[in-house]
Length: 220
Image (tube, rainbow, N blue to C red; front, side):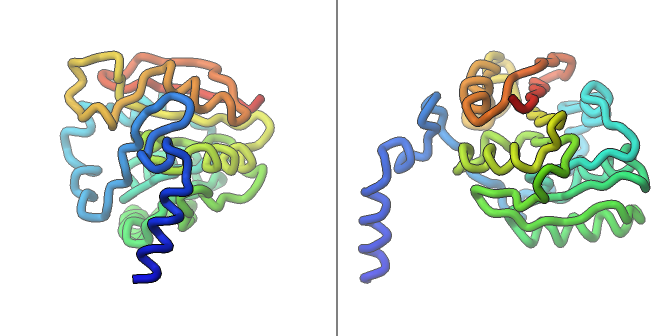
């Protein structure tokens, strides 16, 4: 009972935006993290058509020998594609906050005989990546789920090399025809307003995918 009361007091002491699970800058409601039960949805066959992952990576540009991070990697849908593109001389950090997801990802990488992937168990506010090591950090349908986006972005920035890129793929909230719940969409304006104050600048917006923005940020 005492723990419950203490927890309630802590909650009530938080600012209103934190209590409601919304971003303090834009008022966007956080979507929440998908659990391991949703792993099948992450690898659904329709995703190839809906999200065109290989076309997305072609547009972003993944260099051989690069060090990349797949944050919120889940079961590794994008991880194995990144690992193949960077090649044996490159490295992929596959991050998630759920160990069960990372266990599933590890099995998937082993089945594909990919030895250049290192799994990293992160926290809600910190991906736990090595500082100044990452050429490209990828968030595919992930950023909108962050419950601690501001400290998370600060740690992400610390992990990037001086010329490193942060890339978000997010379903277009500007398009009412995109068939996904509103809290799982973002506008370009929302992403810019939330990410840039944490030491980034929006470098490019690519609209080559059927349903998602490709938002490329660089460090200020």
